[in-house]
Image 1 (cartoon, one colour):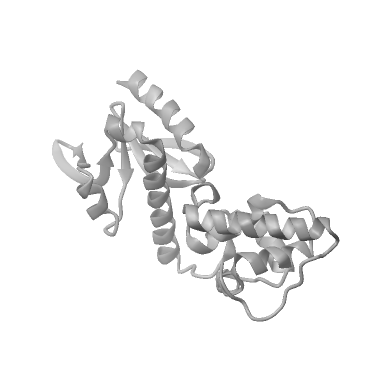
Image 2 (spheres, rainbow, N blue to C red):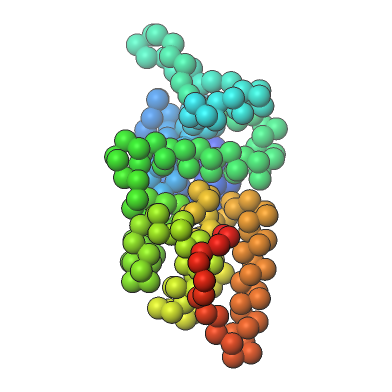
Length: 218
């Protein structure tokens, strides 16, 4: 069983690489999977189980996923982790999307428990370095970031550092919407890419974008 779990861990690390650094720790007689320190799944006896909150459980059950049952001192305990069958493994995009929802909800619960509602670093995609850049650009908390939107916030950052690429813009959009930058909804992703391409074309022709008017849109 340990060998089966080891293979499954390697498979999961490859599958969920877009969620950030994937690490493991002992959990429920198996292995907890963590993305950037946030536990979102468990691997036990070679099987993967995704963590669910109350808001996610109906979607998991509608898909036919069943709870993990953990035996503690001989007493079966039903956990809020749901089995990923082989058919879902084959639907990689859907699986990564569900995993990211699990990460996002776990982070939200952590923030609520800690009473941290405004720290930029608590948002997806925002590490300490990005938080400091945003501070220097006058964006001090999550409220400021949401108020400005991804595009205006990106332009503010460009005034501090002129070589920022598309990934930074997508990271800001994901932080505001609650997604890892690699798992943005297609509509939001495409809108930001179009805006970025247009802005870069302007810069190539010597027209630096100017922050004007009140915030609007992503």
